[in-house]
Image (tube, rainbow over all chains, first blue to last red; front, top):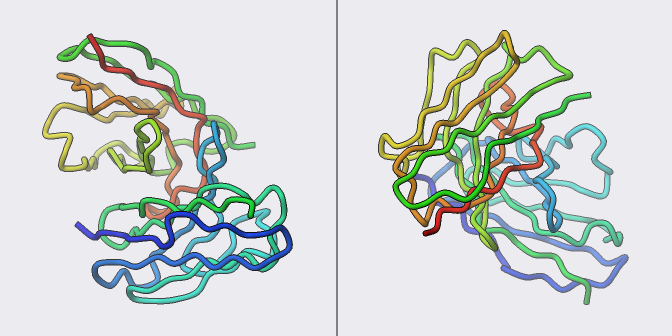
Length: 106
Length: 118
């Protein structure tokens, strides 16, 4: 099983600042990596797939990068609606998720 | 508009059974692979099971160990998860999710809560 490890567990950021979230895979997942956003009491929402392709309707302030085993989700200027938990997921070999990074208001 | 609506969750005793349903609309259901993903209270996301568009290929997470069965009825645009021999650790919100070409989950239902407790 491919283990996905996200860091940090919690990220405290002020509105308008940049947030950088990391995701590491225990073995290469090529570009088969997605990011999801989840707000309390809601289902996850697809943000990015294929490492860097934004899903329909996702603002340009969300961007993804990386390949192989190291990946990054960047939110360029945090808006109030962006405070949530973010999960990375690999789909190269079955489907496994990271444990999540909570982005909270500083 | 793509919609996925789960139902069938509830309180069940350890060792009991439950059947979850997911009603799909807004897309050609038979053309899409589907996943069940669960989330224990306060925890992260965990893939449970996959089914192909035609329903002839199924995969399960190792922890299922033959206890769950995924199925679909394309005529009814519905996805199912039959859960037997339930354990306390199966307590979670269960989401159905549309899977794009067997890769990422592009649409999710709102989830249904399964609580396994005596």
